[in-house]
Image (cartoon, rainbow over all chains, first blue to last red; front, side):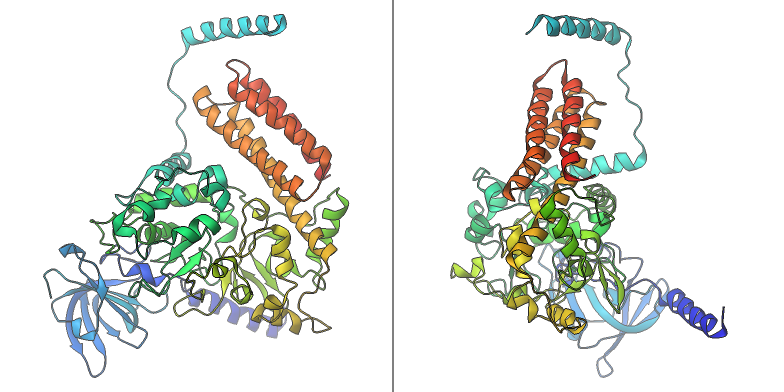
Length: 133
Length: 451
């Protein structure tokens, strides 16, 4: 094996090993109707569930206190926010950053498909509504 | 009953009496996967998830190759849950389009969101669920449904049922979990996935096959010729994976093949509102997922919008302007020495279709034989169901070959197999023997198709 081939193989291996699982091709539209903590294959694996600690509307960042520690989720123009009203037996609806209030239970799905991502852009955020907002 | 059969019957009765006197009713324990598949089968066909009455099998019935088409729909009673929009007032508006369902087998999907149900929807055919083990995986993650993004959660086949329940099983358009339906549990998703993965082929073909028919053989050559048919580029081994020159294996990839740009699409000819379908993701990128071709000939209509009824028409699509002007057609033209996408003549289109018909029948024969063999090893209660499935596969084989004017000798043997399968169902004592004879006829039919 030449040095060049070795380097190419090494780079290839690191990409494969460091790349993690592939990003999913999930259909986000029905995701809206799935209650917090019940998203198949995601909840508990690739999402963070916890209490909203603070929301920085200017920076568009919210902090979530979860079992793995504090997670800072960046809300981008792509981030979908849904209000999970299933506990109230009402339809889940779209929400906005204004619905993110400290103390509420939320589930945050980071962009991509990486587990244990401490912080970063959020793909979606579900806000559990336990009483009529 | 002839004297010889009478004597045989008496022997069987005697043996049965002797055997039953000492038998135990406990069956050997099935392994865990078999149990999971059996549970999944039960859920697939019987579980309504506390919704509007539909099950997975409503749109993916086993008796119609796990898909629906207008001919099958026409046989259903009007209170079948498929037609729930016709008799449930809560689902009358914006849940389905009954006219398009009955005429073209189209189902309504809200793939771009549920906030404007009147205007934001697409009309899609129902893909079969055969050979999923060969068609879901992709380097970009699992791909499910027509546009590859059919499942919520992690996008996997396991998660697909959750999205289907929300979209298709709901009692009202509020879609409240625990009120309008219940979501499948993790165990149920495991079982449903195991069942679906057990359906149909478990591996891809290894082309070329040593086909005997002159036209199907030529069709296979054209199919595999990357300068002529170019079919094998996006349907490697007539499956659902792509191997694009210069890009290597792409797995179960998505392409924009221009189906949406076809003129005179049947559903749109009705004048009913059929919004454009933008495919993968929301907003979509216009791409759709590669379906496997082995199962194609008996699972039409074709493409995500059921735009084309016949397999010949589906092959012919790739010779047309909609495909050749599409991003996929242009990509093929770029790698062609003469800058062409796909150009085929009528005889070549029919030859490719003949090849697809033959590989479909070979798969049907494989399944029939498997079902007949299994039927010989189970109780009479289970046997009837397996024989009925084998008979349906045989019916498909006959229909597919006759539809293309192919292999008349093979059709004759398949007809005989079909007759024997019927006899096996009806016979109290000789079911196994007739099943064995049907297997022999299936093998004779196969010998006319391939070496």
